[in-house]
Length: 165
Image 1 (cartoon, rainbow, N blue to C red):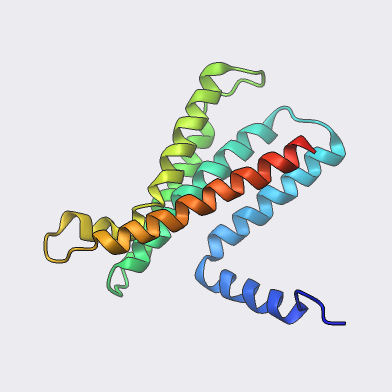
Image 2 (tube, rainbow, N blue to C red):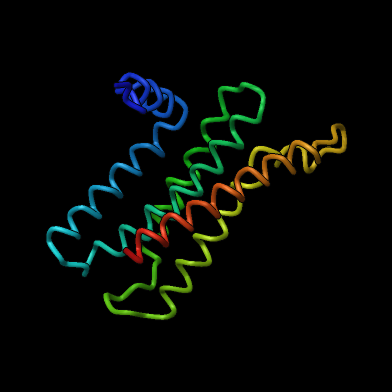
């Protein structure tokens, strides 16, 4: 009987993911660990929500910045752009208006940042070409936009289904 997913395939995929997106992978592992802690501890107060909000928004900002850096020509200064999301994450953690209770201001603050950086991924690889008139990338951008949009919609459907279960 053939197993659908082989362990070697998972290992190779994780190795490629870690090579291309090292900081993002570490952030997802930290977020998952905190969520497991919350599930087993059943305590969602204090530093936990603030940390989850910060890591989620910083993850999307870092992913968009990484995609932008990959689209540029190889330059040794490109990776200084990755300090921007890390700095933003530190500032977001301390400037987040979350006070430890269900606060509408904090939730709106978080959602605006999350959706802003989440949708920035749609055009991050084409940011350099958007501002230059040398090359028309509208077809490439439309294909990328469609692929990422469908991925987000399918993730929402699966996540909503799991939440309802």
